[in-house]
Image (tube, rainbow, N blue to C red; front, side, top):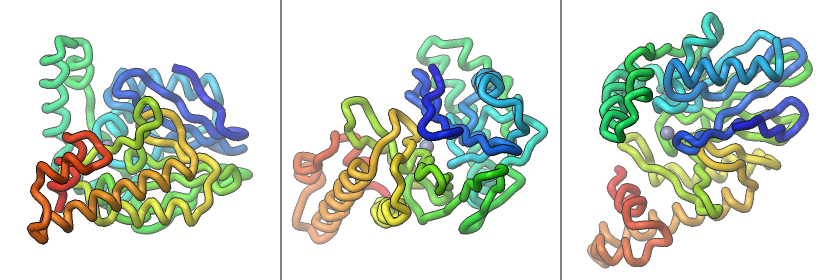
Length: 267
Ligand SMILES: [Zn+2]
């Protein structure tokens, strides 16, 4: 894992664990850490890595409430923790259950050290809440936090750095190996809302979009991602009309069976 400098003072950092990507935006007065990894140990590693880049005071932003993005905050405290207002409800309702579920997951994978770190992890609630848009003055540059609609979750928050043409997209954009536009649907995802969110990203005309997992992507990737989502919506419509069986939809889908099934199951 190394820092990838995408523009002057704008970085992404890639991890083998869950193929996660986090970010860092550095101004002249302060810096903004985009997602904090998944447990108390991982967050401490990231905090130390940020200190290799800059000694400036930091704020944290969660792109969404999922544990691998939002549970590593402890080492950064005290600091401002930004998120969409819906993130609070998600962490309150599901945060502790997610922590316990992933402890079991890592025990099942025979990785007790990961389970143990999650056992020692305390979830930090965001205290700077965003409804639509918020601007953070970092000194010499502004980071704009934007809610663009319901996609991977109902509280996806995008971190836009306009002067660099970079958007951190969390898991609204995931880049699997070989450039495949994989994306994960969960109980909180909206298949119908997702393509419009991709259009909203494109309207901001970024040079680079930092995916929540995998390498950063360009706008062509976002267009392909949006078009693939629209194909899934069309399949869902055909099933609802009785013109297609779910198995036929899986066979026609451009995506793997598990992704297709999860997408078609979203409300
Ligand atoms: Zn996620």
